[in-house]
Amino acid sequence: MTQSSMFFTEPEPPRAQCIQVAEGIQRIVANNPGKMTYHGTNTYIVDTSEGRFIIDPGPVEDSLHLEAIIDSLGPNPAGILVTHHHSDHFGAAPILRERTGLPVYVSQAFPDDAFQPDAFLEDGEVIAGLTVLHTPGHASDHLCFARPDRVLFTGDHIMSWNSSIVSPPDGNMHDYCAQLKRLIERDDKICLPGHGPILPHPQPYAKKLLANRMRREAEILAHLADTPDTVKNTAALVYKKSDPHIAMAAERNVAAHLEKLLSESRVTQDGNIWKVT
Ligand SMILES: [Zn+2]
Image (cartoon, rainbow, N blue to C red; front, side):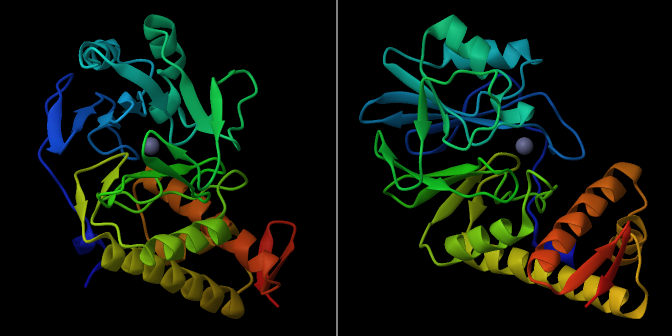
């Protein structure tokens, strides 16, 4: 199987419009399409026993998206949950709070001191029936939210349309792989990612994601065993991406693998040249 064939695609979704994706869960796709965001960021509107929650308000630039979220709040809105601090997920949280008075919940590891959240969330905590999983890797503060009926909101930890970028220093490949293993061992029925359509059968999918990472790592090691080299050259050889945006993402992923391998004493760094120990 080629790497791309495991991923899921979908036609461009409607904008500023709620679509029901599961019982008590609606999705609105922000209008921020891109090479890292697919059609845009998914905002989820989730009904819980304690009222309606927003997961990831999306980017601040899309005012129609913001209005659609506000229109969807219903009579009992309860709060705003944030999977991680990246602006395509968290960006509209401050203005949504300002407009609605709803509390904003972020990870205890949320790195932006300029923003004062209403509450911090930690691993294992339950909020309105949703269990918080701290899943660092894509971002140090990344959270997933698990509903008891085995629906898991995965943000950018696991996406259906593509693999995630892991960009050091905030991104960490050791953590990312550990948190993939954690999801493989869970029994979630579907994942609702931060970008792309619903992901069915998440365990075999996450296993393939992990296998792809391990294959990349083996290729990086094989290349460096042959030729001590830079991140840039190694990424060009291993990922073979011609698109400059994707090539940059590939370099970040290679840098993340090398940080992981360095922490495992399997490579050393001399200036910008990496070699196998
Ligand atoms: Zn994202």
